[in-house]
Length: 122
Image (cartoon, rainbow, N blue to C red; front, side, top):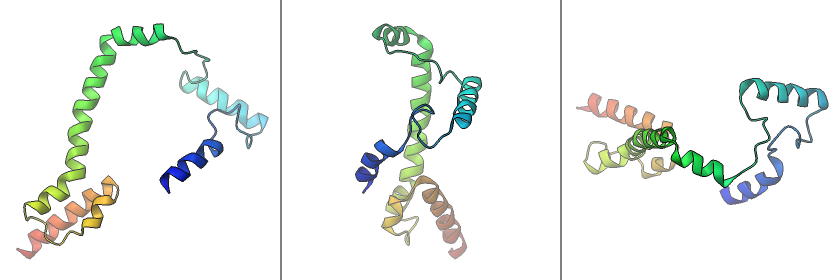
């Protein structure tokens, strides 16, 4: 189902105000002005391999990537697998296995509720 929605989204999601068919000219100008003041998304920047190599030589890009991955990997690992790890250790006995397929906030709230229930029952 997800793959079908993604394929269909290719034709329905607009990538820029100039290609959006449901936006009138006044709204299109407003969107362009908003994008220009907020970011450089309105610049027509062509892809060049020279820019890629320039970015690869920049230590800030490497530091950002290293910092992002060293903080996000443990964060997502902890939040996604805490419930299954705790249930394998016997801390949470009544957690349904289907809750592992829900999004992360649901897992976090399930963990908090299950921990509170476990503390109340002991």
